Length: 253
Image (cartoon, rainbow, N blue to C red; front, top):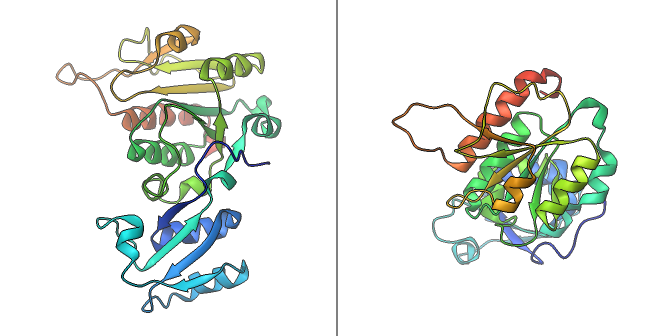
C-alpha cells in the first residue's frame, strides 16, 4: 500500500524500547534513525536495528529536548516518518474482504493524542480492520499517539482520509453500515447484530460528531450507563463499542 505523504509531518520522534521494537518488527520502513543511550544493551533491539540496517547514533543529554522532559524514553529515541505509516483510503479498501463483515473506526475530529492512541489500541485489541484518520481538524500520528497505543499503531492499519462525509458515502456503497457514537443516540449498544460491514464514528471530545456527519450515519449508538454519569471519555466509549462488536465476531480476535 502506498503511503499518503501529504497527510502528516515529515518526521516525529517515538520513544521507549517497546514502541521501537513494535515498529521494527511490524513496519520497519517508518524508522529513519535511532538514538541510543550508552547504557542500552538490549540484544533483541540491537539485532532488529542491524537486521533492518537502521542508522544508530549515541543519545546524549539532548534526549529530553527531543521528546519533552516528561517523556519516559528509556534511553531510546527514534525518528519516524509517519507518512510511511499512513496508507491511502483507496488502497486500504482494496485489501478489505467485505464478505467477512469487517469493522473500521473513523476519528471525527478527536483532538487529544492520548485518546487517539487509546482508540488505536482498542481497535487492534478487538479485531477492527483499520482506523481512519482525517487529514484536517484531527490530532495526527505523533510520538504520544504511538506511545499511548502501546505500539499498536504499527499493527493495525492507519488510513488517511479527506472529508468524513464523503468517506461515509464510499463506505456505504461498499456495503458498510455506519454508526455514530452519541450520548443521545437512538439505539442502545447491545441491540445491534453487527452482521454487515461496520464503520464506527467517534466524535470530538467536547462537541461530539458534527451535525452533518451525524445525519449521514445509519444509526446513532448510545451506551447505557448509570444515571449518576453523564458521559464517557471518547476513547473509553470507543473501547466499549469495539468490544461489543467483537462479541459478535469472535473470529476477529
